[in-house]
Length: 349
Ligand SMILES: Cc1cc2nc3c(=O)[nH]c(=O)nc-3n(C[C@H](O)[C@H](O)[C@H](O)COP(=O)(O)O)c2cc1C
Image 1 (cartoon, rainbow, N blue to C red):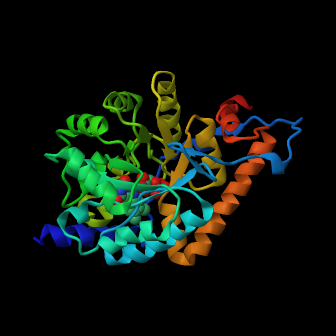
Image 2: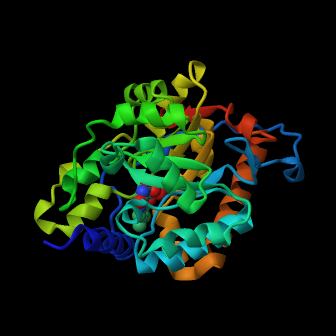
Image 3: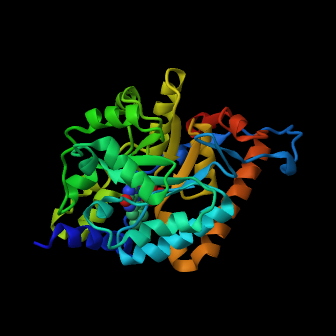
């Protein structure tokens, strides 16, 4: 058995390699976005120029309703990936998440792989990240979260919940006992917003309500239909292959619709992610109730293949297409897009 120090860094390396080289998408389950059609508005009097894609991320103005999801850190490879993703985030003026900071709790050997983000961006929000397996065991959760957020200059902190991944990870810890108690403590004591995020299995309305009652200010549903994290772990440990669990989880579109219902009772940011791989996915996520959307796997591939320019070009193309969708549905800003009508495909024929 290797030391935990080696394990964390090696595991991060495996994750990048597998996400780049293997097919780890959901197999038979989709995000569900393809089941919806926008209500075309034939008499729009808008022009493309007057459509505004800007929005806010926890009171900070950003240029597009999108964030680069938490991916990596804590390994050599992460430094150049994070440098490029951060440069793209800065050019586009959108928030960026760092990958799990667990490695930082062990030693500061790879601190540069995290710090490169705050050294690269000047003004965009940075989101720190730690897993529920570690967070739920912190004795002094507020101090630890302060330490982690300061280490990356974060203006919000993600606690990722990934029970399926922990279950299939060779070194996994499928044990989140203490999670709710520590969330309550941290949400009461820490001034920056706490976001709880899945990694591809989705968050149900029942779970979200408990999180909001703990004081969480943001939920990233990270639903099923994109990268399968049980799939990634099954690639690391071929003996654990099980098709049923590869595709476990609640589709992204379903989770957004469900959590949007909580908006009448709670004030929180709803982040729609998990399999967002086209501009129309990002648009439908907002039309179903998300405040902002996010992607991970597709951006990792793009940055590895084509660097900063690849990521900025890909996203600018998405945002231009988002603008076209807003033109055709008569939405002059993101608030209007969030209220636009989506028609279920079965009602079209
Ligand atoms: C290489 C890689 C590493 C990731 N590491 C983390 C992580 O450390 N913390 C986290 O919250 N999510 C992590 N994720 C999960 C993503 O943020 C995202 O929730 C998930 O991949 C689903 O989105 P996608 O379908 O757009 O890839 C990682 C994703 C990738 C591709």
